Length: 313
Ligand SMILES: NC(=O)C[C@H](N)C(=O)O
Image (cartoon, rainbow, N blue to C red; front, top):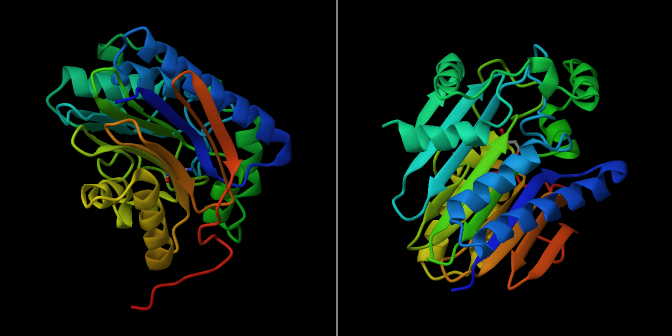
């Protein structure tokens, strides 16, 4: 088994002026995760720290830089999962915390629950000593401008969300062969207040099981939930598919069945990994055997957003 960390910075179409920095951010996060693994750290520490680093980077739609809901507020979702025990922790629609991924991990470690939401999640953060941050500190000029532009009811929210910036996520395999997944997001641009996306839903916004592997997805949350994307990929892997084949099959199914756009990072317990997407771009990076791999564009074209498949019911 070969330890590895694979991270993504969201599926979509990244504006040219943000592309380079988005790619640099995922590379930095993957290196950070890998350093943790190489110093004997756990796969859980590696994915949580890689994701926290991207939450702190205002370029991504997670933590600082999150997109705004229709009222102009930040509500964030996050999930962690440990493939050794199937322990998982999540928060949804949480406000005024800098790193929802740390809070998700605390839900896993310190409670008997899997997911805490809204005000309850925020109160739990305070009880755990996580400081309250002003909402303003999470909001960037860029996010506010996009929110304003999209107040127009005619705006295509799914297309706009997918078009500009993304959720962050990571998967890893450590030296003990444990696999983990972590995902964090501000959700969909101009979403309704209280909207919960795929990210905190186990099997949708991430999954990890030492028997099969781990997945962290990004993309249109409602579509991801309808096909339980993360678990579907692991189901295909359980049937003998490689991480790449399983990802492509599941992403194609999501596109054809519910017109869903998105991308995933995936590992199996041996350390075979994949970063695949059916959107135009997804910033991703992986480190294994001291080698950094990274990308932004499709290498091999999957059915893309430009071929509009609609399932007939
Ligand atoms: N860009 C994203 O990945 C959004 C996230 N999956 C959500 O729907 O909340």
